[in-house]
Every structure is written in structure tokens, then in C-alpha cells.
Image (cartoon, rainbow, N blue to C red; front, side):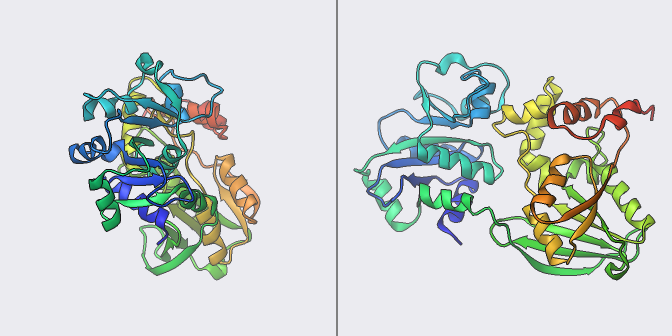
Length: 376
């Protein structure tokens, strides 16, 4: 495991991480960081013991805009000074609630390189992209130096993090597969793939005999949606699209569903629930994600391309309403010979979601919207 990946694991587990500017080493200045999402009283105490300076909160430019700290044209992550008496609940509220936070406008600066690296790890780890940090000078406090030397606190350089992020290649390893007869598709097989450079596992669901698949192969890239796929949530059309794609495959004698571990457009289940709470208060799905510090869509489809290549699929009929999926496969060298729309039913709960996907993300859903709201 690369050092940066170990750092990602440490942050997700709620442990502080020392991020130093490259070339690195314990004598280089940097930041001792912890994610807001996993911040505990113990970790907060550890940060406060580094030096007498106030702690700082680093947020993404998406979150900074939502807080009213920068204009819409800025793409700069920011760092804010925290009051010495601030409580954990206040820090968390500062990173998750809608509304302006002008109290910090007198002590705002661009996030440092270590802080930006910490935000990157938090985002990749699908926790809130916000980190609390203490400046680490070249003269380390004795306690911190001892923990760094013993390895109980990990040290990572900004170069190591940047190199991990810059390696955009996503390789997948075939882990296992087995027959899984489905209600309307008894000849189905599930194949599990694990990202060799990451923490995610994805599933390819093969309907019918691949030898008998049409050319181009009917394919659906489906990002996991616990609420819609499993429980039939009315907030989205994901579950209907999932079942609809299986129906298409069955009707055509087979097809391929790639079930991708990208809950909540890549922000994770916990943050998805936070976004739902913000939507209930009046925000659309895009702005809710931005309030939490995320971009409009954090998903990537490199793993899907790798899975298709592993399965020998080069030409597809893609079942999607999302232009980004089409472009991702084309960029990955997969021929999208045809595209078929896949609509769910419009209802009063998913209407704002569908409108936002059309207006904010350019999804091809106008026909679905024109169909009107279902009375069931």
C-alpha cells in the first residue's frame, strides 16, 4: 500500500495525519490534520497540543461559496481560523449547514498545500471534505515527535498525495464470480471486481449467455443507490432504472449491468443523507452537494471501462440518460454505437431531482418530465 493510501485510511479511521510539504521528512513544516467528519474530543485535544496557535479549518471552494466567503468565480480552497473555545458540534455545523458564515471574513487565507492535500484525501475517502489542522513547525513538540517516530501518527508528503491522485489509471482485479438466478433471469452471473488502487468493489451482472449477446452489447452503468435500488425510494428514479435495464436485457436475450460502488453520485451514503436533509430544506440536489463541499458529480467511470475490457466488450448500446457516461466510455476507447433512454416514473418527490438533473447536469430527461406526474 502506498504511503498516501495509508494516510487516507488513517483519516477515515479518525486518526490525525501529519502532512508535510515535499520533499518531506519530520523536519519539514506542515500540518497535523484530522477530518471534521471523524473528529473526536481525543483527536481535537491532540491537535490543540501541537502549539499555542489557533486551529484552522480548511474547506473546499464549493463549501466556501456556500458559506458566502468567496464569489462564484473562485476555485480556491480556503482556511479559516477557529476560536480557541470552539466545540465539536460548532465545527461540524460550520461544514454542513446552509447559510452564510461571514464571521470568518477577517481571518481567511488560501488553504496551504498540506491543507489542500488533506481535503483531497477526505474527498477521495468520501467523508466530509473539510479538515481541522494545527501548524507543525520544524521544531516539533516532544510528544508529537515521539508519536511520529513510533508510527502511531503517520507522516505523508504532499508529493505522495499528489502522485496518488495523478495516477488516474484504475485497474480492476477479478475477485470471484458465481451463478445468481434472478426472478426473471435465471441465467445470471455475478462477477466481483476490486480496484487494485483503491478501496472499492464493483459488480458485473451478466444476464444470459455472453456468447449469445447482441452486437452492440446492451450495457447499463449503474451507480449504487441503497435507498432507491433496495427500498424503492420515491426521491429518485434509480431503482426503476435498475429494474428497467434488467427488463431490457431479458427482452434482448442478454446484457451487462455494471453495478458501481458510487453511492450518492460518489459522495457516499452518509453524505447522501446529509444532502437529503438539505434538499428537504429547499436546496436542489446539486446545491446540496456543494453545501457539503463536493462538486456537482464526484463519480468516475474508469473502473467501468476496465471491467468492460476484462469482459472483452468493445461495442455497446448504452442504457443511460447521462451524457457523462457516454463520454467516459468513448474516452476510454469503448465504442458507444447506440444509446437508449431509460426512464422511471415522475412523482412529487422526485420531480425536483429530475428537474435538477436536466437543468444543472444536462441529462436527457425532458421526455420523462413531459410525461407528467404519476398519480400512483
